[in-house]
Image (cartoon, rainbow, N blue to C red; front, side, top):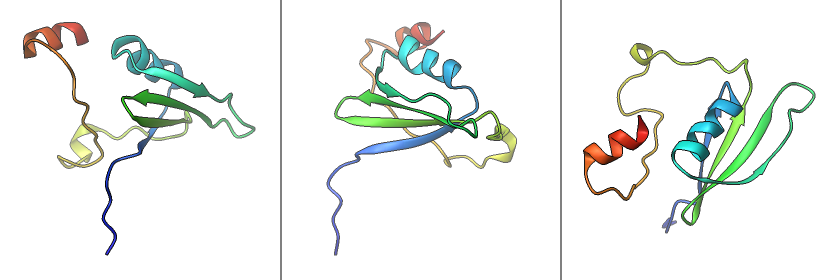
Length: 95
């Protein structure tokens, strides 16, 4: 039986790379390791460092955004551990 020992990376699809990187790098402070220019069909990618793991971001304006009421709870998400004194401090920093 295989026994996974760690999470290496998560892949996300987004419609706006600049906006997404603004949030992940500018707000959360993640490190941009590399970014590709749009290819011939408009797809772009970026790799962000999160501790010892990575987030791979793939962007295409054609990716459809999912409305919250169409997405059942608990599906399509990931969780980041964040250092913060209190939840109010964290929410304030995100705002």
